Amino acid sequence: MKNDTPVNKIIPIASDHAGFEAKELVKKILKELDVTTIDYGTSSADSVDYPDFAALVAQAVNNGDHEAGILICGSGQGMCMTANKYPKVRAALAWSDEIARLSRMHNKANVLCLPGRFLSEEELRTIVSSWLHTEFEGGRHQQRIDKIKANKRK
Image 1 (cartoon, rainbow, N blue to C red):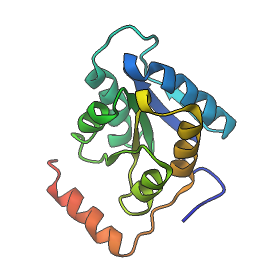
Image 2: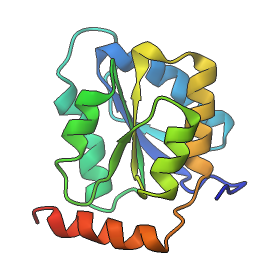
Image 3: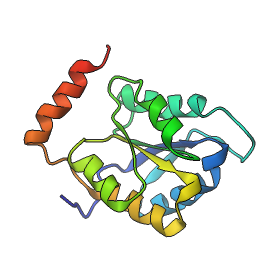
């Protein structure tokens, strides 16, 4: 289900060095969509450890400070693995528009993880916009989300 207005108007965002360039592009895209970003770093392409930055955004979403967040590293995998350690986070790695939409519609993803080394600016634009404008379908998917919650440690 698509929505004309982004579901979230303030998005925390972070990357490691491999995702830094893509993060800067995503911040520009979000600004064009009238979404405010809170940048948790990194601030350059100098080598850093992705778990340190993933934890900042995941914690903000997990604590309820923000509804959703965006994480970017080279492949997106490391950020996604780290974010999913938090019990209230449902991080999804999206490399296409359809995957982004399905992660929201069916999985109620609240953290979008992107493979910064593999997406063009246009692909980033499409994925981010779709993810922000897609709502959770509920229904049969809600029972699955409930099972995910039940399997998370508190």
